[in-house]
Length: 289
Ligand code: NAI
Image (cartoon, rainbow, N blue to C red):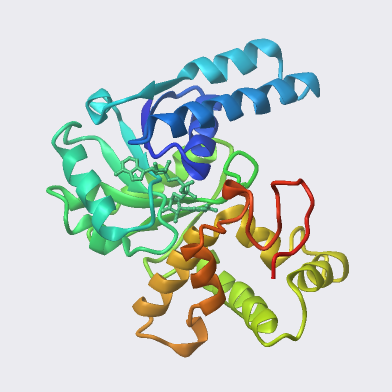
């Protein structure tokens, strides 16, 4: 199977690894060529570590890496059976990419988005063939997180959700079919998790470190909310909250945080920029606020 991935950032490269591991021929495209090079170099390091730890054989590592072809133009996607988009969380930009893509791929190609919050129905409605469009929502980091939400929109062909469900199982994932509502399942629940944590810090009740510590050490969570926001990306997390808030008609329980807005504006985006709630540049984990 030929799979095109648009966007080689945090999620795109992870999804590429998952698809390549399952034997797919993967085409990876990003407008930022340097990002693709950086992501592939990181993937190489991860694969080397897996070999070192004897989690995979050297041949398997080479096999996975060689299955991913970096592309500099969308035209390279012309023979793809499935395209998964993982670019910036912005409806207008995603729509433009899908419209360009439809001019290139065959009518049979399945087009999907890894969006965390944008309505699948609204994205599909801008396409020439809306019935081929579906949400395939991986979690971060995609190679490690088993869950995948499969989200058919109102215009998605009936049998497509089951087809993607089966495909995700064959990729070693545990899929769940979710309705096309803002935030789907996990990101809707998660809004309260992040939102309350941000309010606790904004009201000076506790520091990010204290909150994370309480959730991790005492609450048995794998990561605290601030560590998780830094991993996801403050910009991505903020965009998702804004979309969910707007799409639930400004229900105050989803109200975005001003602190998070300022951090996104200041490019304090978390691990990917070296600083977020914690400082990663010095490899310490000191909270910033
Ligand atoms: P990212 O910021 O790490 O990567 C996005 C990439 O898209 C960048 O490399 C950028 O150069 C590229 N890009 C932007 N516009 C483009 C265009 N027009 N054509 C081609 N490439 C373009 O973002 P991330 O975190 O990978 O998120 C991508 C998508 O996945 C978003 O929709 C996000 O909501 C979703 N998502 C993110 C998760 C996370 O934890 N970060 C988890 C699950 C879903």
